[in-house]
Structures are given as C-alpha cells and as structure tokens.
Image (cartoon, rainbow, N blue to C red; front, top):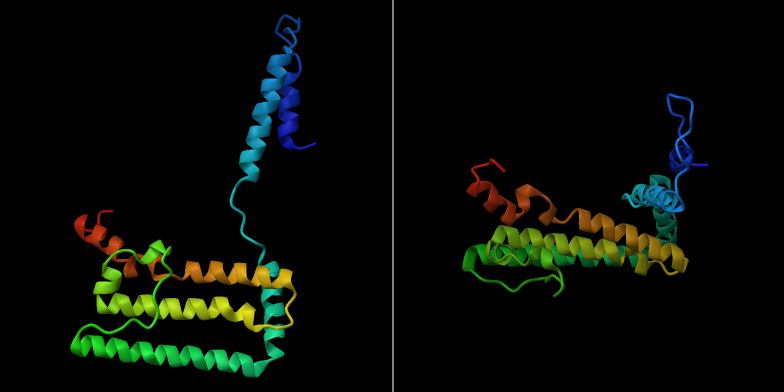
Length: 192
C-alpha cells in the first residue's frame, strides 16, 4: 500500500471527538472525492520528468559502438565526409568575411524554429556557429544508420539518445550564443 492510499484511508475513517463520540462516517461522495484527490496527486508525482538511467544510455551507446566497429571503413568514410564539410564551411566563412555573401554549406530544416532569428543568417560568426552545429549534429544523429547489424530497437534508442544530446548542444540553448537572449540582456542592462 502506498503513502497516498494510507492518507486516503486515514481521512476516510471516522474521527474520534474529544467527548468520546465518533464523527459521522464520510459519505460515499466524500470517499470518492478523497480517492480522486489521492489519485490525482499520485498522477502528478508520476508525471514528473524522468531522466533515463545513465546505465541504460551507456549500454545503448556501447551496443552502437560495437555495431559501428564491425565496419570501420564505413565509419572512417563518414568521418572524412564530416571533415570535408567542415573544410567547406571554413572556406565559405573566410569568403564571407573577405568578400561578403557566400553560399551556405548546410541549412536548418524548414521546421527548425531554433534559427529563425535573422541574426543567425546575417551575422557571419553566428551563421558559422549555426552551420558548424548543424553539420556535427546531423553527423552524430546519422551514426545509427551506419551500423548495419544493429537491432532495430537498439537503433531507435540510439537515435533517440543522440537526438537528445544534439538538441541539448544547440547554440540556441546557451545565453552567450543566442542572439535573442543577448539582445534581451543588452536591453535590460543585465538585469534579467
């Protein structure tokens, strides 16, 4: 019996009065209300955000690493593609600083609202940061697809955990690299 159920039982039982008589027993409606309140309280406790246990996440990544190790050439090729993409990004950034506009190496997905602020495209440094993040995040999230012998359930778990990591590392999540937050800090003179 959990603590909430004990609380309901205590509240539902007739209380003794100082004169020795017992208070009238709660009505059915009062008992139902008490049980409902206890159930709602329990649901709120269970609805709290829960972080996956690190051992579960770690085991998933070990399984992914083992599967990737079965085809090191494929992983090395993906790594080389990533570095070529970063080299293209550096060239585009240098060209933009020297001459002005340069073609983007990578663009956010159309439904990605994180980079909708115009500063992410207008400011060369923020544009570079955005593109560097997108290249790395997409590469990271593509790792499970490289593992040929990965169980489908493990693949989905790895994709999920890697997406969480990539999303957490987005430059939009940090005050020092988020132009909207920087403008708010400047407007409030740091009081926010």
